[in-house]
Amino acid sequence: MEPLMALTNFGTLSGDQLQAWSRDFWKVARNQSFINQFAGSGSNAMVQRITELTKNNKGTKANITLLADMTGDGITGDFTLEGNEEALRAYDISIELDQLRFANRIAGRMTDQKTVVNFREQSRDALAYAMADRCDQLAFLTLSGVAYTTKNNGGLRTVVGGAVNGQELVDLEFASDVSAPTSARHRRWDATSGLVAGDTTAVAATDKIGYSTIVNLKAYAKDNYIRGIRGAGNQETFHMFVTPQQMASLKLDSDFLANVRNAGVRGTGNSLFSGSASLMVDGVMIHEFRHVFNTSGATTGTSSNAGAAGYKWGADANVVGGRALFCGAQALALADIGLPEMVEDTFDYGNQSGISVGKIFGMRKPKYNSDITGDVQDFGVICLDTAQ
Image 1 (cartoon, rainbow, N blue to C red):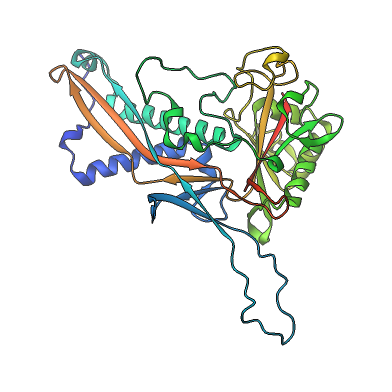
Image 2: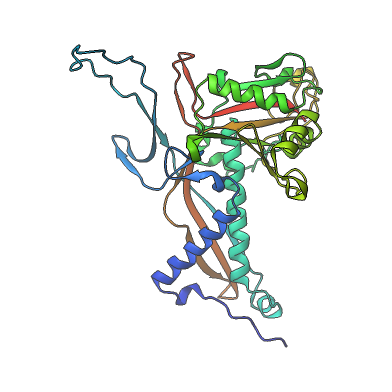
């Protein structure tokens, strides 16, 4: 019989050791999370991470503050400034918090003895991946304004029947804060007319994304005061997230190919030829990611189903579409509160072992009162609907 691998028994760990184990788990989960690459603590991050709670008259919440530009023209010459000060317009966005938990359970002591797999170590990695993957799914649904009842591929999530609660993502407290793209932040690419108002029922199979789409969308974003992420030389960078099929359409577009090929280094080091999932185009980082919302898994319908959740797009609900996301600073607010709570338990008189992990977090798409449109708009993200 092969010797058993060393097992970490949570019951023998001190408080500091268990905290270190939880911290190690969260490090693994963050490293595996795609959206976490774009998170930062300040307002110059695409995803602003909040790690502390704020007390207000409604209790303890996680808050993010959006600061609008000043609109006044100041006071000239020696005219009196006192009494003519302009108040800063700040918008506090409150983020609801909830806990998401996962657990693994081994069949029994004999099963554990027969395997050389370290259950606790393998469980930690599996739980970390599950947590990171669900956070990514939730983040892209939130940015896209799609309810958590829907999968990222457009299909409807399984509804757990009976009186069982808490087994669906829609049961999360912050699920009710998911909102559809606002009017000035929802665009559609039309193969004939270019960038037009968003309408999933109007998407045609020929409305594929191309280089001109990116150029027009960046100009539209700047005209509508979407603030980019400031980098070296005070240059603004935007992030655009596309589905694998939208990236394929871009790579088949001659103008896009020419731009990327000529802008990058020569030879096989060029990102276009090295198989990179991210490409820089005209100051916009294009990222390919599988959880960008699309309707590849949705149901093909008829005109009576057009625009309904769980169905494809187009006038006859038969077009596979993708919702690209054009993001600037503070596109998403992420409340990341404390370390995960990890618990080991035994069942069946100690014959079975199980490990659970729970993480308290929340996310929300910030909004503000736009000076351009005169109403409430999404702050840092534009949704772009195209065919795939």
